[in-house]
Image 1 (tube, helix red, strand yellow):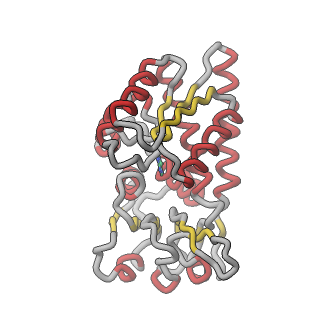
Image 2 (cartoon, rainbow, N blue to C red; image 1 turned 90 degrees about the vertical axis):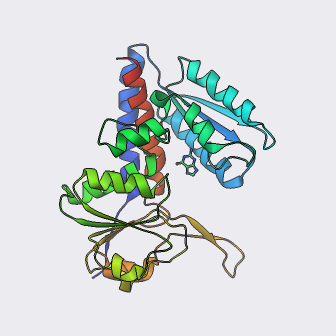
Length: 287
Ligand code: GUN
């Protein structure tokens, strides 16, 4: 039986529409949510993401600021930009696009962002709040995955979930969120022995390893839900890159009960959740 295709693009459009409605209501009261994105250097993928974030921020009716620094910027220069944004009352959300050039310490920059404006949820305070089940800013990609899963299943309580990947941005917060929804959670990674056997236990598989088409259909429990966070560019014979996920879509779609496509699955949810987090930060700042 072919899997149901989870339409993240449509779901994200609905989330953005709800955010835009609430932004309009806030603006009628004289408050405009503001998001600042800081981009250091000229990484092509980062430039595409940042442009898209700016465009969607404006479309939601929010104030959008883009701060660009050269790849040669010093750590002090980046910290000075963050400090100015922390102090700016028109800015409710700050996102520093990763990766940063090697002379700029990622941990130091993330720690400098006001946790109340940390719409990425990467500040250690928000990581700790999430880990202890308290009200936190939640990282956008895992939050988007959770929203898709809740929409599909309603309650996730008691389900067996396997997260493949242990990054701070996706794997670890994803596991925390699933635990918060009472799943039994396993975090698998590149050193996991017999990964197919671990994945086969799962009712929910979240693949976030960054390895093109690694998860195969015969690894899955029939009917499992597959959330593919991977966005990998692979060369084709025509010379044009093809976007693929961390799951081998064709074989997985034959066995899964539901699956996110790449593109059009998790990707659009990330920016929608960024806008939702900015709205939340603005509402908290304005009591
Ligand atoms: N680089 C890749 N994904 C992300 C993300 O979610 N947030 C930030 N700040 N940088 C990223």
